[in-house]
Amino acid sequence: MRPNKEKHHNWKGGKLEDAKGYILIHKSLLTQDEINRVNLCKGHYVREHRLEMVRKLGRPIEDGKVVHHIDKNPKNNNQDNLVEVSKYEHRVLHRNDRKHSYGIFRSVTLEAEKS
Image 1 (cartoon, rainbow, N blue to C red):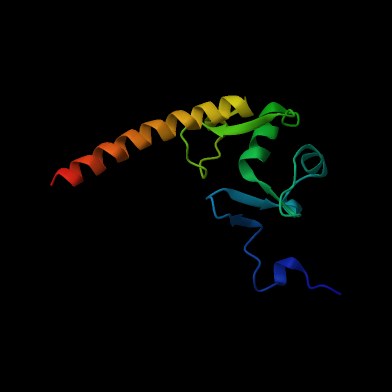
Image 2: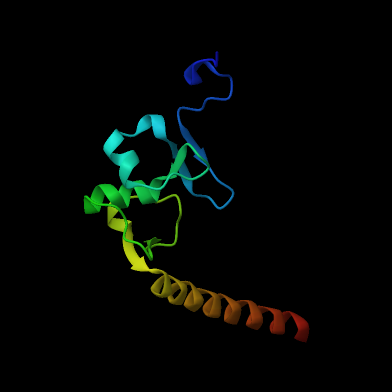
């Protein structure tokens, strides 16, 4: 018989942070309705921003859509900071970030090379 998760030495209250900085919530902290509306990742966890978007919309996230953090901070899962966008729109939003970041990186690199 498996030990109760709350008594397990690694249990951290049902919240984890993944390698990309997203907060993961254990399914034991969700209602059955929420479990049915969100896609669980890593078997028993859901990314908190996806859960908050489902709560905000009152429905599952549409196929082909993703949740975007307006302020680009994966830890800020306030519903006002989240928006459902198409995968294409999301790529465009982040492509613009990379172009801007690359431009800054390139100018800093060029300045350093001149020294």
